[in-house]
Image 1 (cartoon, one colour):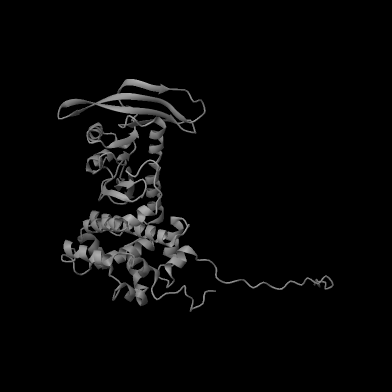
Image 2: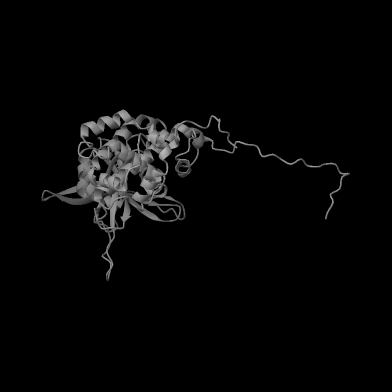
Length: 407
């Protein structure tokens, strides 16, 4: 077994070692300039962040579990700068009163702080550095504080609430460039005009973002996009570039130049797009559209396949963090927990890269949860964490002259 004087032990719990990754001076400066502690001094912003990160990493289901969990580690609270664990009422008031915009600002401050480090850790895509993926993910709520989607239930049932996390990530770095949290009923296409993209960049999204006015806006500003055409779209075929039958093979079936009409300021405008009909390995047919007319059909399909990256990111967030239960029943508190969850995800990503471990993200998150208050060296846990003793083997009697007595 690991001995007490082993070099794998350090003087700080793993949770404290994770907090050391955070640039504290930048946090304090943001708290000072935003005056977030001026309006709620009973529970400073740093103490609230640390408390929420403890609950998120340990996957606490409620504020009671969070506060009682910290109460049980009284001997180690001094490492966190706490004199005592927060009271449930104090922590709950902090979620209600402190504006979630502060944690949003700090999240993007961390993104900027680690941006070069995260970019270097990812291989460059052959499709270019200016490729971005945009999508949203819905999280169900057990209260209607934020309006969900779907029909109203019959009888005495009450419609559940829900929220949407809209996210734009870089295809190479996989780090968010834009995040917005809205009610679940918010339509995806309403978020397109909020994005700030540089000319000659390319954005990928699904057909939920079909908005011809935004498509025209992007085309006028030399911003390229790749998406999917809606099944009920009305258009005119201006030119057929190629058309072929593939049988059971996968590939491009047809390339066409199409014209779509839309109205802007009561004026009707035409939009010229390339439509690519593609058949995958299972025989399913997809219709892609792009305003980049010189993209080859296969290139359009390859770019759209990159959209799966953000689906994996949303799946990773939902599987590894507690997003089924929230510590507050207020919109501000729910958004605060979402921002802190994104901060936790970013910290684990940074630690995983620094540890140079091949372990899956879910394994790293589980190891941190299990050893959160252990005084083990975090990079040893993430990189090695193997059995460090040799099992003693019983000597085998190989003398053929000695026979075993059977009772």
